[in-house]
Length: 114
Length: 111
Image 1 (cartoon, helix red, strand yellow):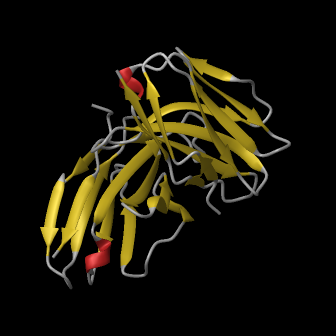
Image 2 (cartoon, each protein chain N blue to C red):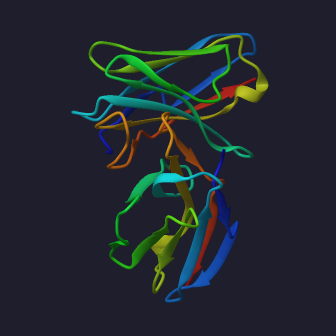
């Protein structure tokens, strides 16, 4: 157990639907990062939150949004889902705003859009 | 901009050595290395900071050439457990300090 908790582990949903992925960072970590991993794209950075505030944005679609709550857990909302959104979504956490001690990844949520 | 990793895939016999390279077109602040086994989360191996020294961890070590914006991961006397996909991640010396991953190197160690 890495200490980063992601739920659910698997999600199957239809095109056009909306889903919410949840992440609880490792105790003491203030930063949460979201990554998308699909077969042909590797690990694509989506967004980072640090202590409740958005800190950096990557290739996140407008249909996707995220937030970090006062207890530091984070949610990634994916709406108007398309087949191409099927992927493994990882959350990672680090102590500071810049990951000078590396990331700890959660076990991921596998999203399948049918 | 994504760092470039090479080779894309390596097949070794147990006990052999391997080197995985990672290069960037941007000035780097730090380089991270992670290993991901199939169906699992990436696991942090080590970080090399600008101005830092070569890091090591058992028989896996890495170097960072700041002038060339390159890092190399060295796996010595490979074990079966080393199999997996190795990703380098680079943070550029800019204000954003985002970690961008390379496309990965698939390492297979055969008995």
